[in-house]
Image 1 (cartoon, helix red, strand yellow):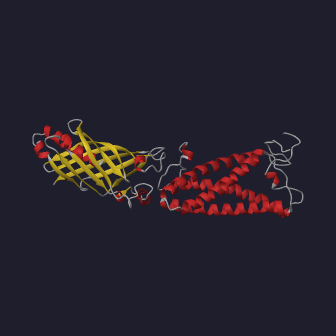
Image 2: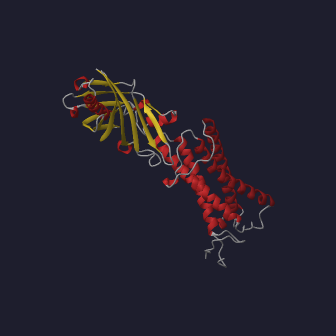
Image 3: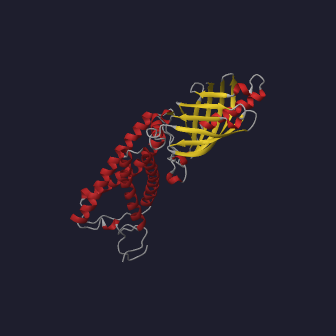
Length: 191
Length: 193
């Protein structure tokens, strides 16, 4: 997911640079570091009867590399530390960290690496990549929309759906949906 | 020849009452064992699954108990043997009434517990439908209260069940009367109701 986001970010940068005269593709091109400042990785899972479970990851890191010559060759990589999951309810957090879900003691990182970036509008990109969690890797797709682009800093709104059963996290289905909705804000700084 | 009698008669219980008795007995004791397993199992994944089974069987138990009470109210009650002492004639209905109360109170207190839990896990008996929560305010304090009540009622229910079983065994092996046998099968039938 993170990788997708990064890729999307790159694509958005290129796209925006075409729109805004003050930011050239050459300006947007480069390598960005995703930090937790200004960023948020939120998720929600619908449950039967309405409502759902939502939370966020507090710790993650990543990079976005925007290829100025060929956006499709841009790349994103993001690492999420699932031990930092927070839902506002300590018992649920402990459950999510346990081997029932993330098994963060044995699988401390969730990694997304982009494999391809495709522009899907002026400020939107579709980022395909490979998501690895609990030792299992599957292709996933995220959509990134450029939120802001200033010299040296970019911010993307990234969304996507992931089937948790693939990653050995099917506990609670069907009471809790198999589909995890991600809603992320990823801010990157050049460097 | 055993009778195929479904309804109770003055001489003994019919198959409906017998089936309800043993089904509820199995659920009542099984739910207690499941509850003990839930609070002792180390895997959170297993605990979650066991809790959902416990809730499913709990709602089934509640439904069956309501059917059973309805059936009992509308049925004849077989008389106790002549030899049963006056003290037992008073004690047996009291224990039976308490057992019915426990059979109702346990699933209801469990339902209240999941209704007030801050975890807000929906109840979906056997993954078939969403059972609404009871209209009680959720809070950590309410959850702790109903959790304690549910556990206390469980132990009280088991104590009553043990008393009930001991009384039945006494009838069978010490008094050697037909009190236990009549809950095994209807008496040999002269009529079919």
